Image 1 (cartoon, rainbow, N blue to C red):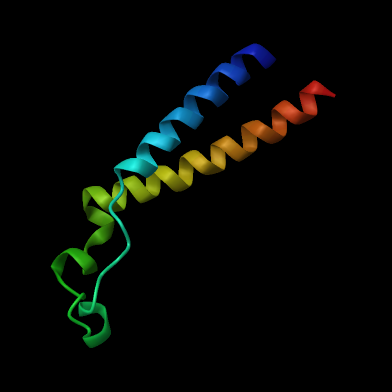
Image 2 (spheres, one colour):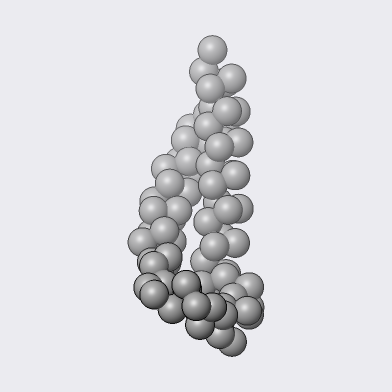
Length: 76
């Protein structure tokens, strides 16, 4: 059980790292001061590729944390 969870844990860590590196930067420049950053892509971010990457990051990170806690309990 612990070997399988450890393998999943390592693979999940690599996947989370790759997903984070694929995300765009959060800098919007001076357009965010005057409200120009509120474009079609900004309003519909949840349906875009960037929105999906953020969702996968949140879900993957939660799974990573849960598996880390389970592995810590099993190793004692």
